[in-house]
Image 1: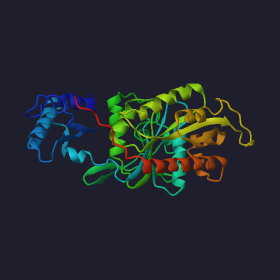
Image 2: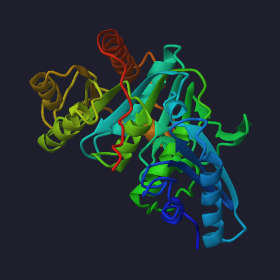
Image 3: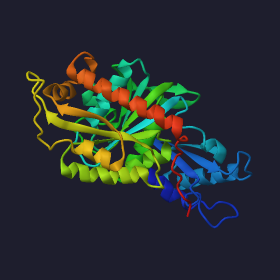
Image 4: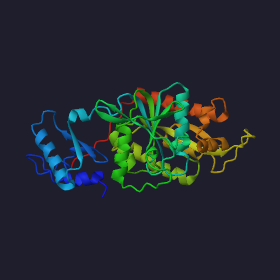
Length: 363
């Protein structure tokens, strides 16, 4: 039987913290569980670096795992004081942008990929995390389906070196699974996989890192806001009523007191159909200006309207994003989108305090 993080937390519920009636798991001391073959590692969070129980509790945890799983596993336990756990997760990243949608099929990943390229075209240092764990499409959109990131040891830690393409550093769960395999993961496993991409990615200094979220609202969204202080979110929708109704739920999530992530604006994708040979013609297949009207109603900036153009679809399928051609109509469209996102980021950073990670309340 393959060992998963839940097996470890189940085992460690037997380790009671000294002078307490609760286990190290119930006290939320066990964090960052990682399993690679026969290696098991996790962090034990204490209230202070010099807690007198560090050695005893660490040994108790190791002994409990060994008792349940046997001696064939190499167990690494890293104790940390709680103040060090508050250190920035991505200290070299200036702006963290979550790209979300209320429902699937609105072209969120297409917008994310082209926005990342458009930002890189401006000379910015850009990263992209494909957080759509169950349907990762970013590798295909960058023509890197067969890529396999390598690991580099930094200060004793194995760090994942992102794939770099078109000036964008990319990590996706799609790089670590077979292309045709269906990912059937429970929430905690998916969340832990995503945390590894974030925390163990060798991102370096970046002006922007974009996070392509799954559609709707889920455990993955909570994992992101609990792991990272998201600077702002971008909501992607189509003009049709079904998509717009779902957008309101997404906006509500980001604006809630529990999450409290500023919304930079709405992108109306598939705003109209324009044949490339007739660039002046507009056919409103999914309705007219639904995203624009909703943005006005909610008091949220409209960042851009992106038409249905065959070149955008072809670029996504071929791994050559339309934003690369900066002189084409679509290249200019994504350039304008990037300019508007930057403008809203600057306004947000000037007028609002930095976002904080969502804290999990202890029981």
